[in-house]
Amino acid sequence: MFSTVQPAPSDPILGLTERFIADPRPDKVNLGVGVYQDENGSLPLLRCVDAAEQTLAGQHRPKGYLPIDGLPDYTREVKELVFGPGSPAVMDDRVVTAQALGGTGALRIGADFLHQLSPEATVLVSTPSWENHRALFTRAGFTVRGYRYYDPEAHGIDVDGMLADLAAAPAGTIVVLHACCHNPTGYDLTADQWDRVIDVVVAGGLVPFIDMAYQGFSQGLEEDAAVIRAFAARTDSFLCSSSFSKSFGLYGERVGALSIVCADADEAARVRSQVKVVIRTNYSSPSTHGALLVSTVLGDPQLRLAWTQELAGMRDRIKQMRGALVQGLAGAGVPDDMSFITDQVGMFSYSGLDARQMARLREEFGVYGTDAGRICVAALNPSNVDRVARSIAAVV
Ligand code: PLP
Ligand code: TYF
Image (cartoon, rainbow, N blue to C red):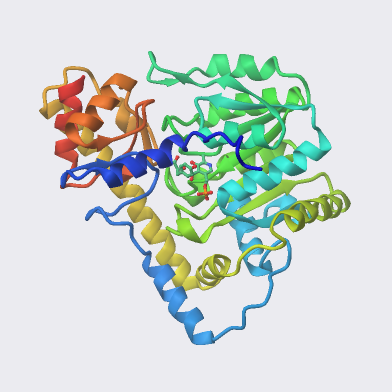
């Protein structure tokens, strides 16, 4: 039965972590996977999450099934965070929000739902994008193509190329957009550039699927969701996947959500029923614990405030490390202007290093980033940043 099965390639990013773990050098640094680490190089347990966990432990709750589309308190809180308090679309009951297994699960439920509706549609993802976007939509049955995004010469975004590619796409094309903290480049569109993208998407009848895995890591919770609110003001059909993996440090609990904005409440009810079929036939219903943690924190004014402060702390620490890296690179004698690193936002930096240089970083210095030159700046700290800077200086 399985004799013809071929070995599959490992995930390029998670495979890097495996090689990092196997590396015996004590001063190795993992800048591969997108996981936030604190100033001591540890994955933090947020204090608000710890407190919510204590509260829940004291409640001795039974472990019943959740509804197919998730914990109602959780999905209500997600809607408010994503669409904003008083969102007209939410007030009109036109937003379907289903709890999902992380942002990835949300993308996959959305992809399966869309494929049933529109199997011939093409999906456009940014060049480059999170590797799993292409793989996931391909797996869901779509043809996936790229739209222009990163401009290496300009250390920025090829906005005109992006607009031209979107304008050339036929109506019904699904466009995956990063709400904030673009993975892997770290370059986000400005508000004005977003307006131009929204114009083209709306005029061309494209279907936006906005992936928001890093809400709160660029400017703030409200600012980072501005693009969702801008789309909601201009169109009455789009999808949004969101995730608490990074913002709550709940990576392994798999807490995310899929939200679908519809034209009216009746359409939303029909869409919800179809989304529930997708979920039911995949894993029946989501798991409880992570959603309870998030809804406990968001539903308690004190814990919610504590969360926004801890999130701000992560955001600010990353910004500091960007600055320290730029300084360290200059101090280590890199002649080029590396200040583009502080223009970038979120957990990642496209360093501009090529695959050969990244291999040297790994092999000679034990500094792990992706072959495309992406480094996770959220894993830098005062103890490793100078060593990373000197290592980069040695290979450029
Ligand atoms: N989308 C993007 C752009 C990401 O970088 C990630 C990374 O984790 C995800 C989705 C998936 O998030 P999750 O870990 O919640 O599945
Ligand atoms: O891009 C990253 O590093 C994160 C983590 O299959 C991640 O988004 C990487 C690969 C993957 C799942 C999550």
